[in-house]
Length: 469
Image (tube, rainbow, N blue to C red; front, side, top):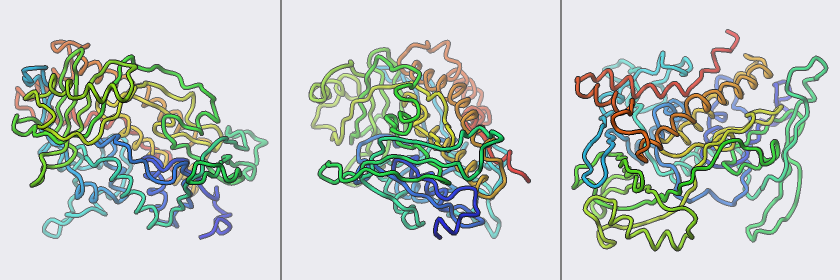
């Protein structure tokens, strides 16, 4: 359906900047919007193909509802795996400090009534929904795992099939909007709009053209990551927060942790040599399971220096003290960690989501999980506007307010605590989270463990509660 056919709607088209995980997920949700027609959406991506760098692979319980309603959760389960066991360990001896098995606790959870989950038939659209003729209202909300490169391919295929326009080689260099976006009495509906200035890039890296995309009646969503051009167009270099004085190295490595009896995800607590080893692909007849091994390193070295140090680090920190002939290193990527939040997630009809809006360290997976939760909330806001169920100024203001509040009160402090836990700064005896897990497990209180694990749903906010009924 053309933009002209939508002229009676509150807006004409949504331009999503960035074909990363959050941009693709938002486009996918918009393309599947019902009961009316899908919402017109175009993705503008600076690169000429999907990002193939190894990044996130684990998507936590709070964002599973978004993967369900996007219609991709079954493909994630088929091509990836579900994380059941998680353990925190001491260094060198690898003695268990605390842990849990989510297999029987989170594999059948009713989403109805859970914090921040909109009302809906959440068992629809997934396989295995019939049980003796009865529809099950439970979902498996364990952490889902699929390497991001594969998830991006799944999302892109679904987007293209759903009619999403994806435009490659369009690098944003500026952003603008009309209408104050504050509901002033002199502001006319027709004046509202947003656009981006883009450079059309050839595959040789040369700029072929510079043009304006969008305009009156359009909405722009910056989903273009930590170095967001949309955010910089709104706020310049203002991105309050800090950068940790630690470097971490993320690797994808085939190594047989199963012979040591390790869990699906393992966190080794140590001030200097903390690391995580989390399964990201199951074992095959030719390989042991593939693990994301992320470990601490000294800052400010070159890539070549980090690569040269890697065999020594693995032999020093991993169980079995393996030499390079005992594992297969596929990828190695150094990262700096940040805790930052934009001054606002909304200026007029320009919106920010996920890493473009906020950053946190990766320990505990709150970065991409929180980003996907942002996306689900923003989708509900945009869908409500499209259907005339909410006031645009009110709901977009609430989106910025509530998602910033969730970052400040949950994502930021909890992710900081997660890093301080694994880096040995909390103290095992004073750690309330690990203490709660130990106590519940010691008492045989499965419901207590379940409540701890579902506590993360507090990062969600249900914007549909503001719909006119």
